[in-house]
Length: 230
Image (cartoon, rainbow, N blue to C red):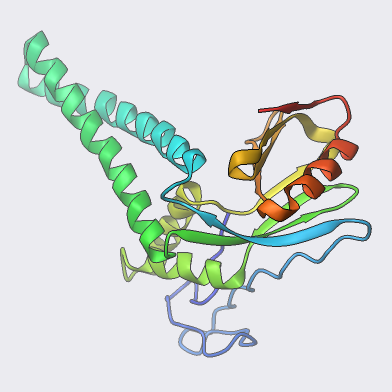
């Protein structure tokens, strides 16, 4: 999850400098900006500007989110409208479909708007070590996501909620221990390596084309017997 780093969580006032610890307006403690992941001993690390508009994984994520939100909204609000209006079956189906479609499109629209705020790329630093992989968006990317969240509202609490929604729709931080990885998919044409975990969301590493072989070999060495070509 992405943390709001450039504004006060209580009042929304902008911080004056990176080393400012207390809000000048309301005296609340200010959040700490995410530190870049160091290169682990015996490991490798790299930065990657994750694309959004031409990213099949992002669009797949948006599609599932839109389907879940659209279906939930259709069931909740559609049922209330149908019961209140005593509609027949054909009208009820149209109401459910309309509410579901509108809600799903809102999710897609929110994702596109959030993507615009980060210039359609989210730069992330990945670090692989003996214990596992860690991915953290850079401070600049976190600031862009924060600014996007504040475009929706001038209220600190609502902005933080929008920040969380944005983090679900855009690539955010990730962690995976090698011992928890149950499968690996190598998508070399798109330079993506996906780590499948049993009880967690999959972790996707975006790798520069020139380093894909190096990173893939590192993963195979640390996840023996589970790697497969996706």
